Image 1 (cartoon, one colour):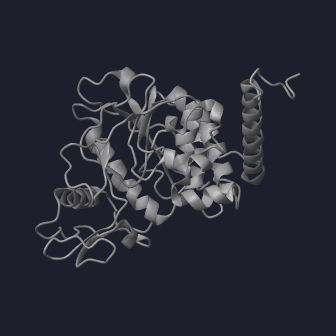
Image 2 (cartoon, rainbow, N blue to C red):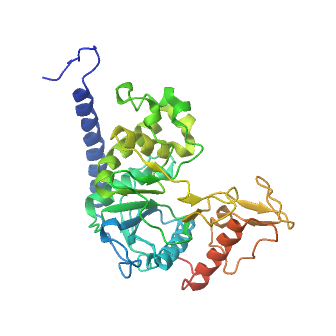
Image 3 (cartoon, helix red, strand yellow):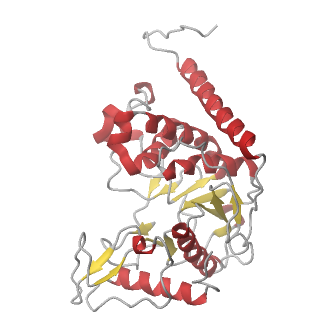
Length: 360
């Protein structure tokens, strides 16, 4: 009945577009689900956890569940352990709205951290579907988690293993307006030609697409339940489109979340104070999270040598095969406070996590 229907302006009916989108989602979702079940059967998983103390005066209606996606690679494991340590340290302090915690492990099987970190095991994408782009598993992991888990909180913080909480995190969202960190390299208006493949003109200007990724984001669980399947589908379509894949590279999945949110009419409050990224951000006094994605390289005189291995350095990529040792050397004088604080927090975590340097 809907086939070929046009509106008065001669454009395809929005209802037809909606039906097509829904149909595409279920086709992809059913394919992925059937493939996963047929391969290994139902997955075992653990959910919830760490629901001990809450921040002083914390409003139960504002509490958010902390969720991070991870793999079973040692590189991901040691970051997850540090992240979880600082979550536990900050959760019960005044000003915190942090609720439960889940590591969403998309390696398809349990690992050695199951007893240490509350974890839910989910399936990765079918073999070859991510085309070597491991973070393409993130939206599919969230789809599975939201479908299977019992989540007590009304809000969710999507976080990553290389996040360190430097102070208690309140709920930065405002009702139906989620909170997100703006990334300078996510530029929807400069990529309109590509984004129109996924965000049609009838949805409005591409400026409706927020300059964000999925993390860090604090969002209502009900909103994420709607966005996640679209995020998954848009990610897969972007990866399959050669022009889009080449243009967006390792931030493709971030663009996919931004587009999926806009398709659902969800606008995020942009919070620059959400997190900092050393060595470019120099101080921690007005932030909640340190994101240590960039290498920190300095001379012994405290001069930044970014792009060149420094006389002193801290770079997570130095520890692909083994975790950083306990008691890392502190930066030399002159290095920004943000880097000094990061190293001190890593040292405190590794000093207090049992069996830190044990093989996992």
